[in-house]
Length: 328
Image (cartoon, rainbow, N blue to C red):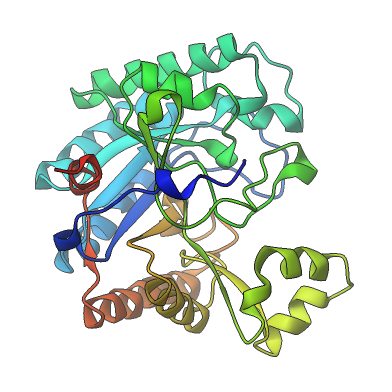
């Protein structure tokens, strides 16, 4: 993905301030160590969403649930989600996992788990099936999209714009999936920017920050260290360079706090946090394996939300983002 032009950066209103958003990849459970399988459609972990929703709500934080096809077509899961968004601030959006999203006409190979690698007609058909399911289940069309595995492709933005989507959050700043036949986001900044046909889509990348004494080396240095045995680990342990995404999943708390300080200091106006819904139940993701991990997960959020409040960084709902990005 090429770097956006500075002129395409979203000019957030002055009174919008610096904000943050929390997006939940709301999806089925599967074995993260095994190949992806279209038969994995269990969504039992969704029952943990109300408690998490309450925790965030107590801190005034709305959640944006990006749901995929197994969730969108499960009656019990949708009943839960409809109740959650009755708070008037939280929202439901779209997350497309092509391997469980009809029509399943592609060959099941790793490259095709990035939906943007599929033929445009098949990507469009999958998007239509999922968008229609969410619209019927929620009673309103979704306005925000994320490609599973961040697998955006050359046709994706036009397909989204044609279907009335307003925000995409498929790009993961500073990450490169090209070794797996996925996209390379090395040139994508943390700042929101306009893209797609007619600049109709606002891209809100997942925030990723380099911290440490050598952070000015950024993506280039991080890529070089990846070619040196244990290079990245040595630089991280000695606080020279760490790549920190804003998520409690595999990102230590101290690193996250440093990353927040850096992002705010660099003038990032919207910090985009995320986690996977199955992490709310131990044993479904490698990030939360047991009760101790779950307690650490909740503690991570308690401290991070307190830090954001101390800095005056307020939560933003999906509606807040859409209205503010439209400008005066």
